[in-house]
Image (cartoon, rainbow, N blue to C red; front, side):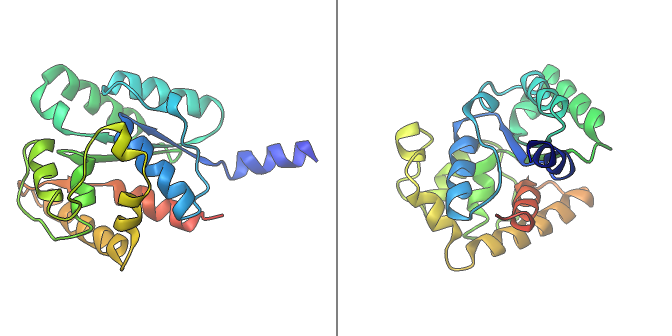
Length: 200
């Protein structure tokens, strides 16, 4: 029985979320419960916001024949040359690896949350700028753990078709990026589409 279970895991590994911070951690932890996603969300896969640490965590997951979903903010790489080079190397390293799904957002994951409420085609240059706009919809939104660990904000993101709208809007933004337009974007929708297909 144990051997069959191990073989099944190798064929269909449970995705592991790897993220750069507590916002990503709590968001996916709440989705795991609210949307019944089959996914691993563990604190050890979250932490320092740099590409070097993300690569180490991805490699750990791959050593175990896992599937890594990497969620990170791209704004740091826009401001820091060294980080930009690390992110480019990370993207290049995993470009053809079907066991790694890179889901970056520019400037931050909060832009993904904002897309649940409105189609925002303009560029945002900082996370703070996005959070100010997001607070028009989630007035209490805060990046501290006390706020983030409460499920209500994620419940709000998931109701009334907001999640579907966010996915559609994120795809439109990605098309604009591919055309070379200067816009904010989020590829977090790729993680959500994958997890929806693999629901428990």
